[in-house]
Length: 253
Length: 253
Image (cartoon, rainbow over all chains, first blue to last red):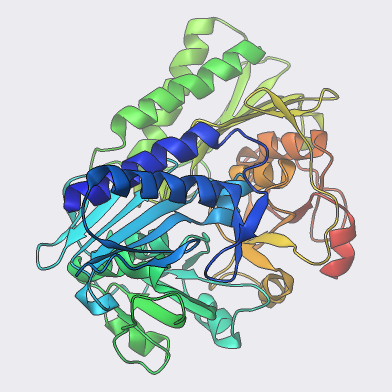
């Protein structure tokens, strides 16, 4: 099954890159199952995934941002965001990805996750209880550094006042606009924390990234400060904070 | 001379990419002429530039972040940031560039500028009075869009309160940590505004990006709301706001 998920990421990567020069990739083709408009590039990517699954003849369910849940009466479900960071992809900001994971019922039972940066082809990968890898090399989160914290924070009109307060505490702030890669940056010690409040996200955005973060030594919490969990569906949306070292939770209290 | 600057960018690109996997690229090798520590990757990139100039046998002065000003008693000066976004480059955040420009005395007489994204190889280029180009295709700034402004803002401990207020007004915020590319993103309509206050920058960071922005239809202002200018030296540092459409200046007053 791992091979199938890798093939999905690879085939999406090819399809997206073939179409990147195309001026209409940002056109809305319909409303997606998650309620937000499906752009042509999302549609192209999702179709590449569906085609890959079909050709594999594997029995598996499928949950994706655009098409929703396809129940094939299988035990396992592939959880996909065909293009995470669609705004970036469509507007020439070179930071977007495909995120694909395999699970059963909920985020906490995700057993495999892969996030591929579609710009530079970095592949972040994790298998439950087996660690996290970037391009085949083991990654770990960074330990607490009070002096020079680097925080990734969702900001703008819809962010909370608290989000701005947290951004003020960081030595450096990044706001990159691609949740799955933002989680991977915490996992690989590029950043220390990722704060996403105000625009709660769906499991499709984060399923792979959360496993990659946890297997690298980090953790992710919901707005009640509980360890984040959610079902494999498009209904639930969650605010969260992801940290490489739990000591950052004190710092942002 | 344009060919020389293109060669500098190309040779830096090769040298940086050859060394990216190297674990010691983030080590400090000495203090640079600009007062900040020179990292190994900066040093490698600057040496590639110096080598390229030497081989060309062109008579030209050279101003660069690490080595400072080399006065060859020439009329023109090459203004270089060998790696812009060194923190990103060293910490695995895939957004950094080389910025190289040609001028005489000051920012406003820069006649050619080139910014190359060292991750995806995008090349932004402008010649005075001849427009701006991304990979050979003409680019223009976006016109005012009150509803969905995308602002690039420098944030963190050293940013101004005003920076956070401006970030609150945007529909989307990006904070990417590479000034030359941040200017190019405004030039190419990816973002609408770039606000850099609190950590003022040097001419080496922005010489190419400012020409690319202006030739694409945008403008850049200093903290006194005057059109930004500065000498070709490492002493001056400026806060600034760059806009694709002047109407954004009203919005952030």
